[in-house]
Image (tube, rainbow over all chains, first blue to last red):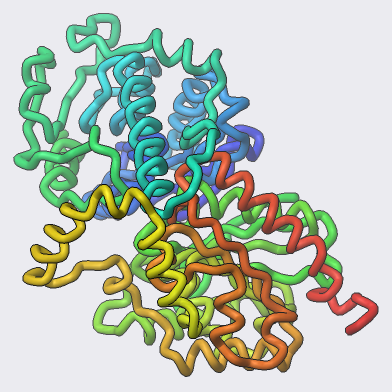
Amino acid sequence: MIEPFFFRDEQAVGFYHPASDPNSSRLLVICPPLFDDYRRSFRALSELAIACADQGVHVLRFDFFGTGESHGLLEEVTLDDWKEDIRAAIDEGIELTGADQVDLLGVRFGATLAAQSRHSKITRYIFWDPVISGNTYLEFLNHVNLAIELRHKKLAMEENLAFEKIPYETFFLSAALRQDISHIFIDPQERESSAPYFVISTNKAARALGFAHYEFAGIDYDWPDYHVGVLSQKTVLEAIVRRVIEP
Amino acid sequence: MRERVFRYGDTKFGLGMVTIPDDMERAPVVVLFNAGLLHRAEPYRMNVLVSRHLAQIGYIAIRIDLSGKGDTPARPQMSNRESVALDWAFIKKSLEHEFGKRKLVLFGLCSGADNAIKIAAQDEDVLGLILLDPVSRQDESFKFRQIRGKLTNPHKWRNMHNVLRHRLISRHQIPAFASNLRDEPTPDDLNDCCQNLILRRGRILAFFSEFSTEYYNQQGQFSRSMRLEGLEHICEEVYWPRVEHLYPVQVHRDRLMDRIVQWGKSNLPHFKGTASHC
């Protein structure tokens, strides 16, 4: 059974999925993607957590500050808040489970954030369709905003209404946060961390990025195309579960 | 204001999150349903922020994952209607166990609004509805307004060749409207829901976005088309044809919050049973 809880002075929400083997020493911490990516993948991540817990790995999901069910508004978030969320989630997970091996799974921009995190208990990083650079991610967010603006323009025309002059932004992010996001990236040849990076991707072209451990999940997914659909990707989830349960 | 986990169901697998106001005295409970397949926080964190805004003004707000949505496991071999009815019975049991018997307000977008209407048609404790893009009947002038709108729209004339081509192509295709995926309330459900709320002196706040324009095109149409005496006095309608169905633009969500909070504040004494006219 999922056990939701609050941590970081009740500001962040976490969801603990106990392992089928209560004595398991392994913990998976999931850094979710943000915004539309999170909406699209929420159920998939919930199912992934259940599958990994059934296979004997404790799982902890959480929402970044200012997103999902955690407290705060995006306008007030800093990049350090999100980095601290990851560290605190790992510590909480270790305290809850007694685990001494942590796999950190990052999805999309959650992977970019996970790659910034260092913790002595992390034994490997698993990235699902990682966003390699913060700048690319900001471009993606701008692309989403532009797509939404164009849709509203078309809508106004269709309904014969004046187009509203408002900022067509899905979420307001502070200039400081945008600035901080633009500076972070994942280095595929990272040597600073002793824990290896494993990439599971729905994009064949991502192989060229040079990650030592890369797996194509056998299916293409249109992350960059903004739409309202919900993701259900069995083959990706199976690939991640295989990687997680591997000793 | 504080938040904690809310569980429901025979095995307590049903999951939600409750936001509790500082003053619990006679506080009504708002239950927020999933929108379509989205989890309880969505879309665009709307349910979270609506919960917190309503709790700040004195409502207990619970955002729920119904079976098969978000973190609640599905009930196999059950129709949506059966599953929602069973979920609701368990949700009410948990609500009464935790907070005692209280007046209920239901909130839902799209299929969430459908569920709210179906439940309000049956449950006499429901005194309020906040509906985003609910179903609506068409009134006598709907078609006229629709045709006039098309004829007077220069864009439609300029785009006539595309419209005709689209019509010809779509004649041979099975329509796949989002509404086909919905388990909409029947006309009887809608009628019973509105009748019951009139009798109980309930309140309705209904928003209609661009999504509704195929069946709703004028503020007041929902109440008018139901032909139920007194409905227009308890139902506040907001027609926002420039707003997208899931409110992806923050400015639009902020407007929505303001409107809900305004409605929530003005009706709180009524829901608490402390208004002078009650």
